Length: 116
Length: 112
Image (cartoon, rainbow over all chains, first blue to last red; front, side):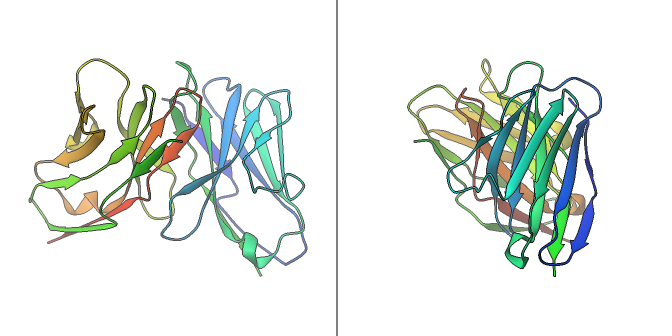
């Protein structure tokens, strides 16, 4: 399977600042990446699908101006939480679509965001 | 619309006991099915997957699952659990459209 990294693993920021989270596919070129959000004791909620070289596709209810996604290369996608507020505090996880097709995904270790 | 239901939110078991984590799905089309494990503050690790072929699927760490099309189920089993199996387990379905739909998760707690 693919090896996926995320940076940073943890971030604490003040309300009103912006935070960038990186997702990297370390061992193959990923045309499709996914961003999820997970609340404590809850399942994963798909936020958006990130396609290399094109605009991300956001799920219903996810503010695209709030959660900016950039997939400028085949190994890197970034999620920027703009003007973060305490309610944006969460665990953010990215995944990479496998080589055999988009039906298999490999997940990064996650980023814990805490907004004070 | 597709959905995944994990019938048990928490499953406490004693070490070396067998365990079954239940998963049911609804779909009008063929699906691919997955089980993932998540340890605290970590991402998801693939345990096993059903894409086609044999309905009994073997995965890592001694886990297996059986795809039952008539019951629309994909239950996860392990004959003898260890303390280290304590984690959150997620069942997921992919509808061939690229998106994974997750169940609510089952917290497996293995006690000595």
